[in-house]
Amino acid sequence: MHVRARAIICAVRAHGEHGAIVRALTPDDGLLAGYVRGGRSRTMRPVLMPSNVVVAEFRARTEDQLAGLTVELVHSRAPLMSEPLAAAALDWATALSASALPEGLGDAPMFQALEGVLDAIEAAPSARGWARALVLFEALVLARLGLGPSATARLDDDAQWPAILAALADTGRQLDAHIFAERRVDVMAARDRLTERLKRTVA
Image (cartoon, rainbow, N blue to C red; front, side, top):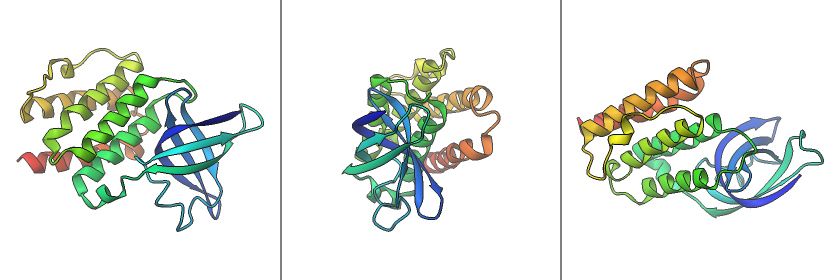
């Protein structure tokens, strides 16, 4: 297996003394996992940050083998990590992608949707500029997994905070019940942090 593609870093897990296992979303090959030698080094940690865009090269002798991965940074969103609300949004969008999307199935629209949400979080001066996009991204993930429509279908471009928070609660219930029922502590905690910060912002 050999894949070289633009990719969004979605999850990073320490492996061994110095390495890291990285899950990244690509347009044509979907979510892929790879081992980065020295991934925990001072040089690589800022590169292997969830939400960063990289050129990723995965190499494996067989399809069943964990690929070796090398990356070249294209775009860093590290400056947003000092902003608690934006950081929580980036953390959740990438964690959702890493945990819910199937591996190895190309889905260019899903890649574009994630990239669009991350770009919106980066560009918007306030959460109002990206909260609706994030909810719609959650709905798209649910739809890709075969789950039904939700209240997000009624979110128009001028949706106000009560409607956005109601839709967020609706997608949250579906994610919790159908996708993360067995992994709530590990995955949904990131979403809980985000929703609490959003509620404090609009209170």
